[in-house]
Image (cartoon, rainbow, N blue to C red; front, side, top):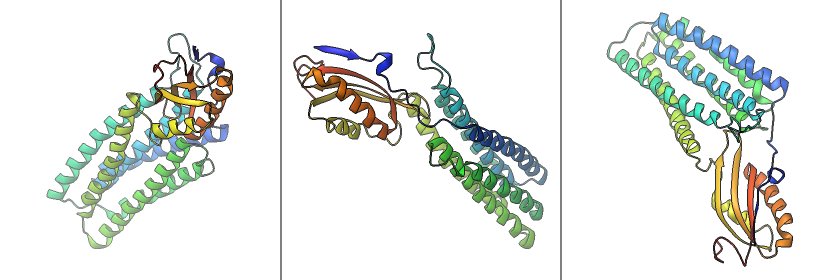
Length: 307
């Protein structure tokens, strides 16, 4: 007997951590402060002809987009599915991440070309002013990181926002140091050199973002989940489970993962209990949307062959 078990009641609907009003305010405040600083830093970079400031502004802009995406992901969690979009609009977070990665690659190219040109034709810049702008960046980024510190261990998006802003504070420290060096030594080459270094930092994170976004957009297995480990964990749950096959794991959004699988059991009477055990165990793998098809040994879709 083959029975498909995937009714509405059979899905797990625990979506994990949902942001509180204070956290929502933290995201909005962080986005506002960082947008304001990006405008100031980019404008100062153009005015002072500083590639370090311009490239750091590009880096900060990428983190603004990251904060917006994290907040968007939380918002989309609240949208209910409908007849046209049975999973809701969660996948849009993945598509926006992919778009963000493509835009960042273009930005990195512009920064690298401009920095190389300045290496070939260095120009004097006021190091003291660069240092002051970078100092403001340290304060903005450190304060934004502090906003997320309390909740950083409760959700991966919040943790990602915290780590990005903390890293930005360190990058701003580097720009501050370059401004001080220029102020007291007149070594203007450090500005385009630092611009190239920051572009490299952006490129490294962008390549990772592009790779992850492409994989998730193609319904690949999300980072941190090993399908074989998932299957082994399911098999070890109950002696009544004799097979696991047709396993598919993918991301519904940047924050929620899903799984479908066929489970072969010795006795159909234990199917409901086994199903509940499996759903609970998959929480450890951050898989909360689960659809299972239960089968018996006598009649399963693998013709008696269990994987």
